Image 1 (cartoon, one colour):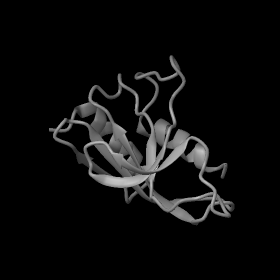
Image 2 (cartoon, helix red, strand yellow):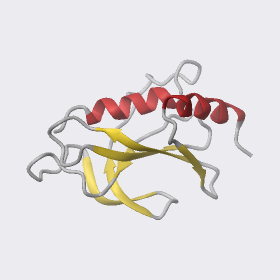
Image 3 (cartoon, helix red, strand yellow):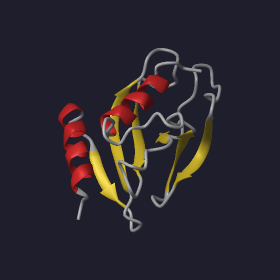
Length: 130
């Protein structure tokens, strides 16, 4: 059973990103997959599939980090800052390109933030190809 808050937040996200998928792990955490996220010039790809986890306890527990395809690089072949190649998504068995991206401590509000907030933060990171 999908926790009601996660279900409502996912429906809001899906209303803006029709291709969004929500899958669950045996641990109860959910993985959100957003295909075809456009990237600006400066990346090795024009679009990526972005994944992140809604942890157990969401929304009190904030999402943390995100993943894209393992072939994403800064134009010219460089590794983006705060990222690591061939990093397995926990519980998913999917090898991906991991971005160490976090909400500043004390900045996540479970009463005011949702999956769209987190996705927006991830997409903001991807707007700067460094």
